[in-house]
Image (cartoon, rainbow over all chains, first blue to last red; front, side, top):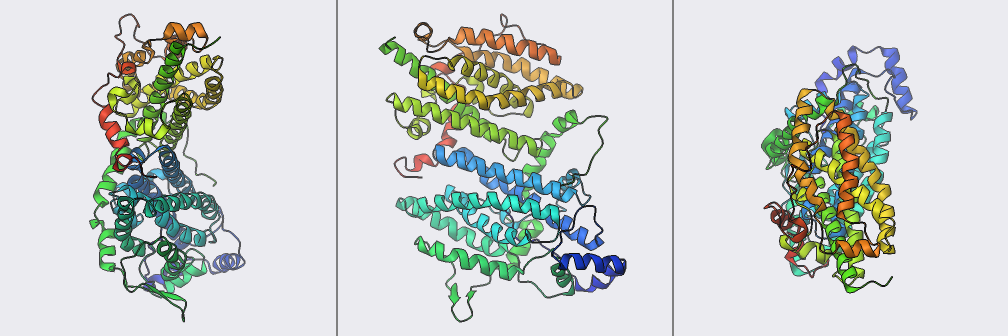
Length: 330
Length: 256
C-alpha cells in the first residue's frame, strides 16, 4: 500500500544537478527511456535518478512494513475464521512487499540495514496514511478497500516507469493488491448491508478516513523544472492531482452505491469537465503529520524500533563470519 | 468395528484438543506479524499461523459433522474453561527464543500426531491428517534450521536458546496429558494414544537437540504442565479469547 512519493520540487537546483553529468551518456540514457527501455542496476544513470529512485522505493518499502501495523492489530480480533485467515494472508503480503521493495532499492546501492536505520531514526519517510489509528474493525475494512485501491492507482502508474527492478516488483505487488481490494470491498459490503451497528461502524470509519485518503496522493503538484525532468525520466509517472482524480472517479460511485456518505458537501463530478470537484483537504494537517506530529507517528516508529532491537541478537547469530554482503541483482 | 458412545466421546475430545491447540498457537504465531527479528521471519511465522488456523478450521468442521456447533460459534464464543488446548500454546509470544522453542516442540509433536492419525480407522480424520502432514513438514524444517543456527550463533544466542528449552520443556510435556478415553481410542484404532506420542516425540526431539549441542532436561525430573486438556489454564488464555472475540461478540448473530 503506498501513495505518491514525496519528491522535493526544488527548481533552482536543476542546473547544478545536471552540470556534473556526461552529456553524451545523459543523451543516450534519455533516448533509451524515451524509447521505452528499462534501466537495469548495472546501467549508467544520472546521480539524481539514482537518488530519487532510492528515496522513492525506500519510502514505499517502509510504508509496507509500517502499514502492516495498524491492520496487524486486527488479525487477533478478526470476527470468524474466514476474515481471520484472509486478513492474516493480506498483512503477510504487505510484509512480503516490503521484502521485495527493499531488494529493489538495494540494487541501487543502499543496504536494507541502512534503510531500516534511516526509518527508525526518522530520516526516511513513509506514507502519511499509516500515522492514523484504526480504532475499529470497520477501519481495517476501509483501509483494506480504499487505501489499497489508492495504492493500486499509484502503483499501476509507477509500474510503467523506467527502472526495471522497481517495475517488476510493482507488477507482482499489484497482482496481490487486487486481491486485497476484493477482500476489503467484500468486508465493507458486509458491514454496509449488515445490522445498524455494523452500518454505523463503517460510516464512522469512512468519515475518519476521508481526509487521510484525500491526502494520500499528495498535495497538488507545483510545476518545476525538477518535476519535469523526473517525469521525462519516468521516475514520476503522473501528477498527484491526476491520480486523485482517477481514484475519485473509480471509487466514489461505488461508495455511494452502498448507501454510504462522504463528509464533503462539495464532492461532485462536473459533467462538463469530467473532473471531480471537492473541498481541498487541510494541507497544513498533512505537513504536520509528515513532520512527525500525527496521532501515531511516535508509536509506529517506537514499535519498529523495538522490533529491530529485540531481533538484533537473532540477526547477529545468523550472520556468518565469512560471508560478504552482496547487492541483489533483482 | 462399530463405534460406541465412548468412542465418539473420545474422538470428540481428541478433535477438540487438537483444534484448540492449533487455533491458539496460530493466533499466537500471528502476533509476530510486523514484529519479527527480520522480514523473512515475520513472513514465516505468518505463513505457519495461517496453516495452523486453517487446520483448526478443518478439525472444527469434523466436529460440526459429529453434531457440534458450527466452527465460528465453537471457536469464538467459549470461555477459557471450555478450551482444551495445552498450556504451552496459550502463553504470550515473549521473546523470539521462547517462540522458536515452542514452535520446535509443538510442531514435532503435531507432525508425529498427524503421522499416527494418517492410519486412523476414522477415515475423515485420517484424510485431513494426511493432508496436514504435507504442510507441517515445512514447519518442522523451519524450526530445525533455526534451532541449529541459533545454537551455533555465539554465546548469547546459545544461552538464550538453552534457557528457553529449560523453561519450556515441562510445558511441552503438558501436551501429552492423557485424555479420559485413551484406552477406547487405542482399542478402536482411532488414535495410538498420548503415551505413545510422547515416547515417539522424545525419540525425535532429544537426539536432535543434543546433536545441535543443547542439553535436554530429564523427563523424570520435569513436572509436566497438565491441566489444559481439562479446562485448567494459565491467566493468559482468557485475555487472548477476549481479544479474539472482541468484534464477533458485538453481534454473534450478524454476518461479518
